[in-house]
Length: 410
Image (cartoon, rainbow, N blue to C red; front, side, top):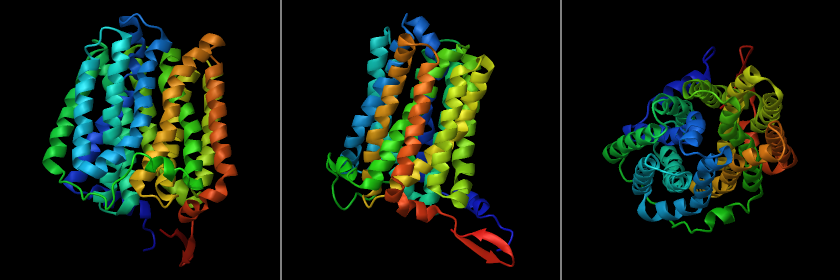
């Protein structure tokens, strides 16, 4: 109908979901909160445990390294015990290891507990996407937007929770997360029925085999470099800003809000108008420029650039997820596992390497290298664009004219 905005219609349909979807999405918010939770308290943890920035950054490295490897296990497990039991197993592990993280007496203990937390998060997050896609009303696009909404909200609220609880003690955010995930466990138990098991069981090597598809391998490779840039900002910037938990939490809350808005509202509009490949390519180049300015600017500039980076990260997250799930003919859980297996290695590497690079050079170079990584990610998309044509064509604008008004076909 003339004058109607398809995105407004989509916004309405995305809200009409079964209780099981809302329960899973709500628990996903808390799961993603766990990623940014430690951001505003990293300096406090370093001070409390008498550790260096590079030692504390291992909280991210152990978390994402285990998450990456566990991606090979998630499909194997969920295809045998079902999505609901896999979600509950992941939540239970997060509850236990988040609580144990709060009791740590050394960096080594905390790094070890974060690794266990990463295993639980991998089981939950990868399965949650498949469950939401399978149970959501409105098709896979609505499901992905709902999932990205949960990601954005979690990434925004994580630093805020970390700041509010961490101002009293760096231990409290871990206990708070354990309590919230326990609530998520109860909600999943109450509202989510067991999902139908896949017709065939997934092997441990299926995600690796899926990467044999040129399109999926290209998306995963590009996302690897993008994630290096992403997690340089998330894990290294708090040390550069060197602010109180409250102030750092406010910065990353604003960052997370931009991430959520651009992933859910802006990215789909730009995809409809320009196509996925142009959007992600331009966003990566802009992220690279933002990183360079962040690295060489003064303190105020660094704060502004950190917040602005949330916009580019939000757009990239949405486009990469859709490309990974739609570009190959592998089952979505298998394609997602293969894609995440590759990209989370960069999330493990960046938090460890960025402080080390600063020690070897100066405070500017980690951001320059992150910017170069973002540009490489864009180059991979451009060079391998023919392998990504299938998904790109689906999201290219198709113009039709009704009474002189240009509309975009779904």
